[in-house]
Length: 63
Image (cartoon, rainbow, N blue to C red):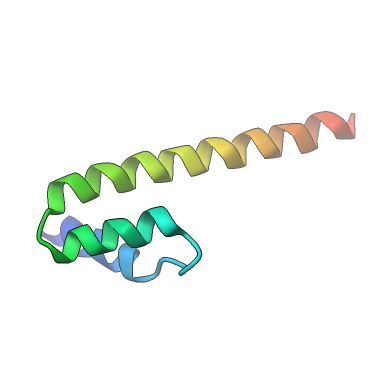
């Protein structure tokens, strides 16, 4: 349960600009938690990948 709660906390802190996550929040209110948690994982993973790629570009262009 604790993990679920922290995930919900994450959801509440989402910026309003992130439309995908806002849709997820709506689903969550409709009581489909498992779907939502999977999606969150996907989105977070994608965001991390994007940040890593940008970081690599920055470090490579510096040399």
